[in-house]
Image 1: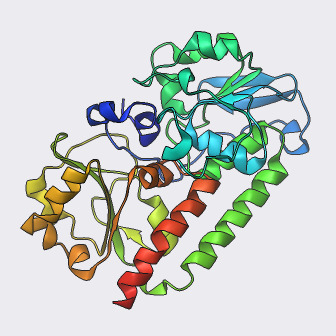
Image 2: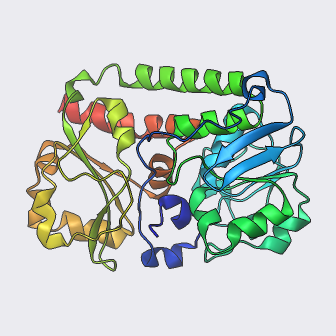
Length: 328
């Protein structure tokens, strides 16, 4: 099974080299929407939420929600939904994901997800949840979903993949009975995107590649590039946003990444230095034109498993790079 950045975020940095930086998927054709009975839009309970594991019955409005992934925590904060406890899996500090630092008042419980990405079911049980929200991959690991569901009703996803930030917002807003708030959050975030990118029309139609790179992993792999489409860019030939498979592409094939724009997460400073010192990398069109967006760990998470808050963070961090490239 392919492991997205959501799962990378659930392990220590020391374990990152064992996993892929697969991406949050491009928007997909969803299964029936969450709470697709008549109560979904009215905010009434009980309601039925359709997930990839089957229908989940919520008899009452949840009051003690536990969130076990960064994208859902992001969406919860944007919706004004306060979990009783949450873990994002990146570390014992929210400093790694600055858009979440201070965004939620519930208890940040880094022990809910172990250093290897596994769940501590006893610790989750101790939070006394009446609803658990978790990304698809975490719940798909072994018997995780069944064990979580034995603790409380558990919501994952309505598609067998990651959800775009719009899909995740709609899914959770409908499930939690705040559909109107979800629509408002999406509208406001999309307006922020429009405002931030309105001076970048010269990028319209240019191609992008979005990659992770690690010497230890043996080369490059594709990450989620759909966020670059907010800047008017289009995926280059070969750009794989599906993350259905994890394939390492060796440095010898770096010339394949001949897109107009290149965004890349080098896992370590040494990895970045190695690329910058490589003549083949320096010959790429994006490097020659100055249209390379280097991502740190926070931006890798922000763009691969985005939520409304991380999208805003990404715009603040990345837009100046494009402005400078176009001005040169």
